[in-house]
Image 1 (cartoon, rainbow, N blue to C red):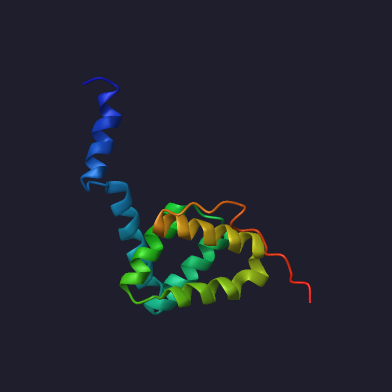
Image 2: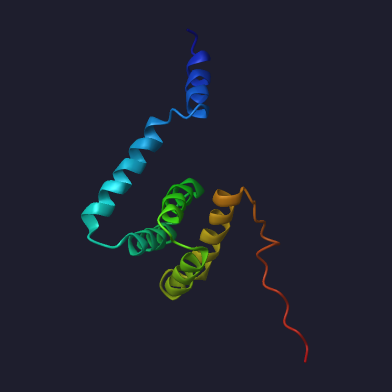
Length: 123
């Protein structure tokens, strides 16, 4: 087997659903849910807030939001969490998180132009 075949083989197995790293991360997350003593909804909203605070990668949102949705966390719950933490973490972190969530959940790339603040109307 050549050194080129190893990465290709690994990518092929991940594409077919063999993702031991992601599976381990998911299992670790589910174990911490049990240990937290929080209800499922609160647990995932706290995790979303922590991801925003640390400016996490889109894949982190994807993992957590997927599990959260399975447990009944709604888009409105996530939006409410982002609004609640904005004064603490800052609007730039929340805007960054929102674009990463869109990218993770829908494959949507949000450009800076899309995030521009609309001009105020002249009254």
